[in-house]
Length: 192
Ligand SMILES: Cc1cc2nc3c(=O)[nH]c(=O)nc-3n(C[C@H](O)[C@H](O)[C@H](O)COP(=O)(O)O)c2cc1C
Image (cartoon, rainbow, N blue to C red; front, side, top):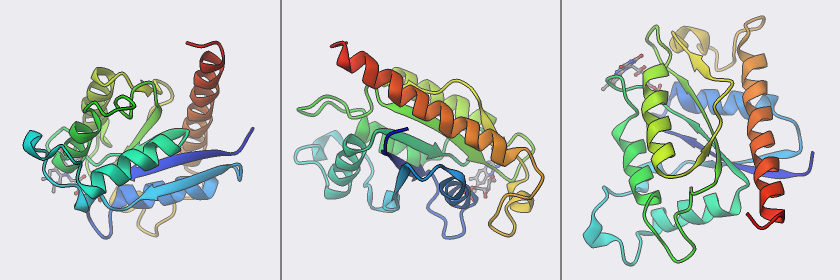
């Protein structure tokens, strides 16, 4: 595997976010060839307003730049009222807008994971996020899916519980994302 950079984005602003903890757990189990660029400035992304697009607010420009510089994106989404949180959707609305080089997530390999305190582990938020990424022509990983229900218990110590299937599934998600990146590179080398 060649060295790759993954932009990691947690959809939570919360200091003790379970989704941010989940991203940290992924960075610990991923192979050393992967560098994670954790974007921690979601709170600085203003509410989307078409009147404010030009020039783009600095936090938006920074996020666009870091996604463009990354080979792939990993998003950990919380679930709010059976959907992704508004702050994450707001960031995606900014990212969906055309810029000189094209929308930044178009054809970008993206993997989705999520942790929630409820019994469904963000499956509804992930479906919601997936449909928005589909509209944006992002290259979202279909399988495997990773949901972490009752995450306040599972991640109580900040680590995934030893012996749970979670690390193996997360490893498979990371492998799938790397596969998507390599597939995208092969297509690009063919001029597609
Ligand atoms: C406004 C709001 C709505 C929520 N709705 C859901 C929900 O639909 N499903 C669920 O499993 N948890 C729901 N929760 C609980 C979240 O799973 C929990 O707050 C979780 O810790 C949020 O992720 P974070 O720790 O990364 O911030 C909700 C929480 C809030 C604040």
